[in-house]
Length: 340
Image (cartoon, rainbow, N blue to C red; front, top):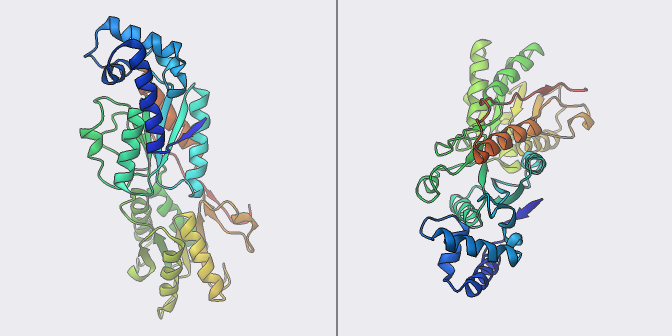
């Protein structure tokens, strides 16, 4: 089960419920909050009485019944950049599946790359007493994780390391994507190779860029800066970037795109220019689900969202339940050849 963060209205409902418990127990709202969150400023007798009242009032719907005695809610938080992104959508579904298999529900929030929105979502989740947190693709400094979250709170990152996350995280082998791309193009006889990348604030794009540049060096090929475009992770940017590549006197023979949106932008530009893929220019796509249905079919990198989700949830649950976390390792990004 995935629960979606809905903001102020949900918080008001939570406060009314806490007040109801407080009225029945004859204590303050703050005392109820502290007791249900395991704060040390409530006597054991009062804490036990409040928890029993909460259980009798079926406070389960607000997170606590299954964990009143274990001090766990059975809910984990998940913050993603953009749930409409094809990879993120698939990853979210896989995380929910893996969490549910281990007895946890998922509370989901979408940050849209806004650090304040991310912070608000995380703090809202903490207030709702999640047991742990997965952050996927965070883009900026998360100082609030150090200053506003409880110490030792279980956090796992996906695709961007976060220093506060003591459990570490998991990502794709993004540097290898660039290396493999150059190997693939070189075997097909291409020497003029370009790439289009999203913002380096999103570390996977930077790693894919570094891998491509390293791959070009290993093959003794020119890394022409006019063919290596870095900008927004949007269809519009990729479209413009490819158009600029094609205006040069010398044009690339092959181009790596590093997200599904960037791939779609390049494919649109190729069509508008009347070019023939694999004849005028070869495009190596990323996370495109329909590559084999294109004419001609297109080779594509596909991140293994299921394996990433399994490893992330496994690490988080280990941290929540006090088990040893599995050894950290990133997940390979297989290259599916055209026509397969």
